[in-house]
Length: 313
Ligand SMILES: NC(=O)CC[C@H](N)C(=O)O
Image (cartoon, rainbow, N blue to C red):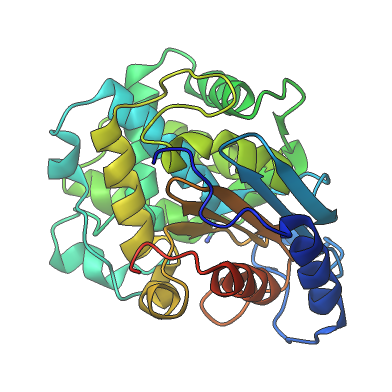
């Protein structure tokens, strides 16, 4: 039945236990340092938040501290673009796993400037181009959208991170100019990159993230407010893409071991959608070799396995 928790018991104590365990685990990995402002983040932060469709909130550790959402912004950007554009969007960005690093450039030339999916950087830059063309002020539209979804008007972009990415964004600029040369970017590249870096620099907490993406677990309707954010088909499509491409080149392994649609970011966050149950958001800055946060992967894996949450069961 829609909205019925699959496993309501002892969530809060499990969330506490997983954070405690994560704090003790030295999983290695390094905080992202290719964006200098991110390198300054304390690697010891650990947060976990679970929000169920019935509104129950379970949090532990640093679940209320905002951090740089980075690539998690690609989910919000895509949801906005899908609202504004029909299926023509899928001629400009595809729906296949890339099998490459999130910022890889090699595939893009072979495939004529059409990115494999909206959750690698090239795909998110195309989505940013859609937003720049469809909104007169795309950056403020983006921030208003996430504030509304998270019911938190204090959410804002971290300008230091934004500037830092702009200064060190040569690879993303290369992706954007290559796509422009193939005719897959409409607006001017600097304006598109400015939007892309801005949305990556938005700071949100685990609680904000878990609350904001509840609609993906509930066929497009935001559980707290009953507002329809997107149609059920769009929610299905976003979840499908998250399952196949949300964890970059570790998406196959994540599906194999966990089995939930999820998106990671180099700020150390991951959100995982559990259809008909709720959303899990975890944060710990050090990253593994795929650019996914090791402890956050571990906390979500444990939570899902212990409660038997998987879309493939
Ligand atoms: N994986 C990520 O979180 C990447 C986002 C980052 N802003 C970048 O463009 O490189």
